[in-house]
Image 1 (tube, rainbow, N blue to C red):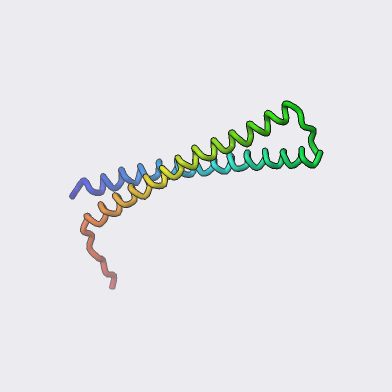
Image 2: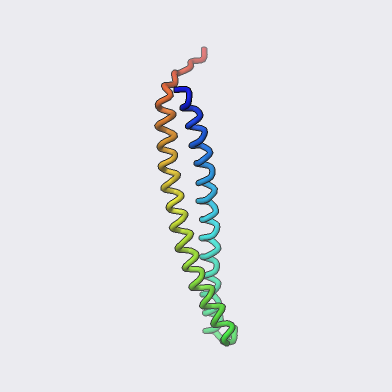
Length: 108
């Protein structure tokens, strides 16, 4: 019984770490979306004649779009994995808290 609060505290620390990982992945997913959108905007600019198509433009567009999609997918998968891990950790924490057999305190 005495080690339950310690185990809960350790799980809380682990939750904080995994939550930071999930938030970091979300930021990278946003960056990847911006990369894909930027490549798309560049393609539209070329189609409307606002930007001249040359080897460098084509290389940058392809890199931005393909790289963005790859980065998006891998970070989205990592984010989902972290969120599933968070759900499991929170359940374990809640189960340990329920096992503490806390009593109600009434104020008069």
